[in-house]
Amino acid sequence: MPKRLLILAATGAALAVTAGPAAATDNPMPGAKPGACVDHVKPISGITPRAARRAARKRVVRGTAQDVGCGLNSVSISVARKKGTKCRPLKKNKRLGRLTRCSKHRWLPVRGTTRWSFRLPKRLPKGRYVIQTRAIDFAGNVQRSRTRHLRLR
Image (tube, rainbow, N blue to C red):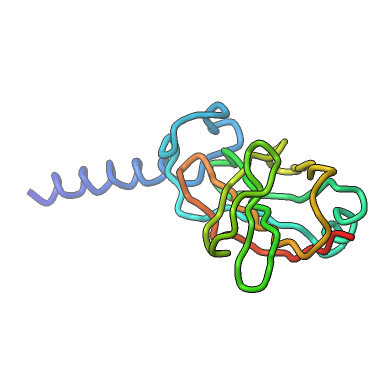
């Protein structure tokens, strides 16, 4: 009987080794369904303060994202004009929506994954904006959004 337990333990160890962190070649194709890879580490994305200042002048938000394990599936951004305690989120048609809670986000896709960019519309009115980013990896782990403030003049 102990031999059977030893065989099962050895088989379980072999499975644990093969189910470890995926190599760069094990990543599924972009657009694969979440859960295609097993990973418990959330991805990271963000904008540096310097990039936020540059975005105010150039109207292009640039950032980076990374993931340990399965790789990045997508990165998205939420842009909202802050007015008092409420916000007007940027919609897919590149116009500002109705005044709503700032905790309500409209996630828009960005161009790229590890190094990404998002072009802000030229017609955005002057004011204070809240920009949030989030990344999703192939395992379906969603990053808790990171916030950066921006002032358009």
